[in-house]
Structure formats: C-alpha cells, structure tokens
Length: 62
Image (tube, rainbow, N blue to C red; front, top):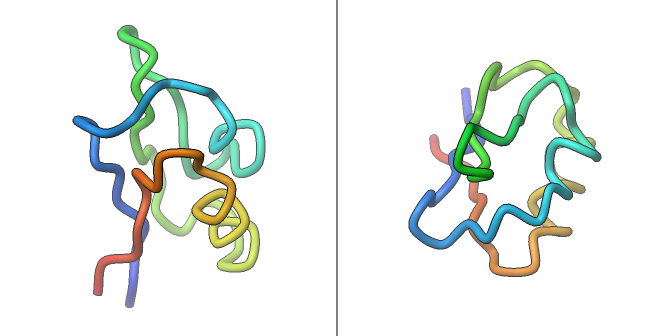
C-alpha cells in the first residue's frame, strides 16, 4: 500500500495539505506538515493535497 510522506526540510508550512486532507495531515508546533494517519482521507483527496503543495514536499511512498 502506498502512503503519503512529507519532506519536512522542504515544507514551508503553508497549511494547504491539512486544509485539503485534514484526516491525513496536520501542522506540528513548528508549522511543518506531518502525516498523522496515512489512510485518513481517500486517495484522491490525498493526491489533491500532494498536487496543491507549492514546494512539492509531499510524495507517495510504496
């Protein structure tokens, strides 16, 4: 099963991914995105969050 991963070094903390897929992503105390539940949202919603990331900090991992 593939799951989303966040490159925390690239993340700018824009907040789009938790806005789009709140069951999968959240911003930590430093405003950096993290995955809280890989299958939290459906795959299409997670893909929308990946595609919306302005710095391409989210990707699928097999």
